[in-house]
Image 1 (cartoon, rainbow, N blue to C red):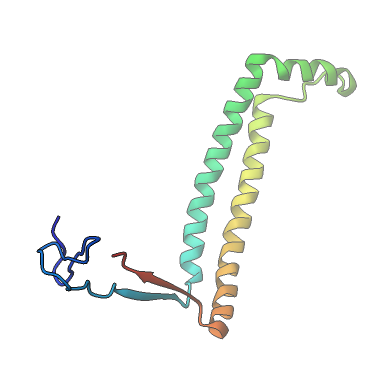
Image 2 (spheres, rainbow, N blue to C red):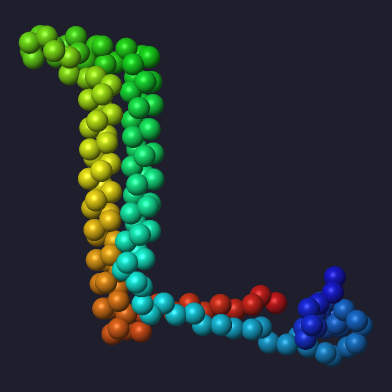
Amino acid sequence: MSAPAGLTVQDRTGRSQDGAPGRTATAPRRAVLGLRRIRPWSVFKVALLTSLVLAAVAIAAAAALYSGLAALGVPQTVNDVVSPVRGGSPVLTFPGFVGAAALLAALGAVLLSILAPLAAALYNVCASFTGGLKVLLVERG
């Protein structure tokens, strides 16, 4: 195992790998990264794309859930119990179930797309007072 340029690796006896006693390793490098400002437009674009993908996943999951429940006979049982009260029309249908999931997914997508840039703007205001987030990165040695 060879050490990178400018770095001497020692074993437990205090000797470097090349056998010279007493030579020590150089200090690990450090870097401070700061997050001072987030662009709300970029946050909006990422939030919109993420929420649209999550909406599509939610709609597909609702379709799969209804299909699984239909294989067990749950929608038919619910419709048999509720349809005498409603006058014979079924309550739980595939288009109604997936449509309700699509409506909730669209509502979630709109809310996420609106609230994410507001959160970024709020972060920018707070970061102007506090200096933002800072992360210290230290190289392991």
